[in-house]
Length: 113
Image 1 (tube, one colour):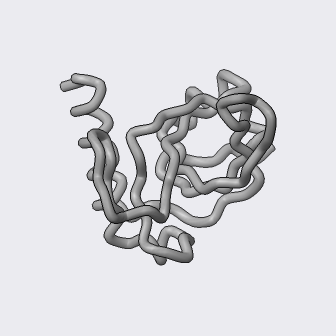
Image 2 (cartoon, one colour):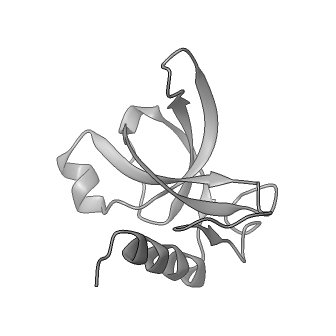
């Protein structure tokens, strides 16, 4: 299995909250390579193309096209842990500035220094 890197934008199979279906969605990997090498899971933040509102923990991407996304997008404050085999493929990677913005929102949301 290819290990993706922190900041990679990936296409994943998300199971609905009621567990009655699956949808393919983009997400950004936020777990480290070390974490992913030592566990069968990966930690990621969901990405949405609904950019009209920004909630706590959200970060609107400046370089969304370079990250492999077809539309302007926001990385949400919705963090999930999934099995690595639910990652279908890598679409691209966040720019250094976008990754720094996502990390800042995560730190703020989780009250981390």
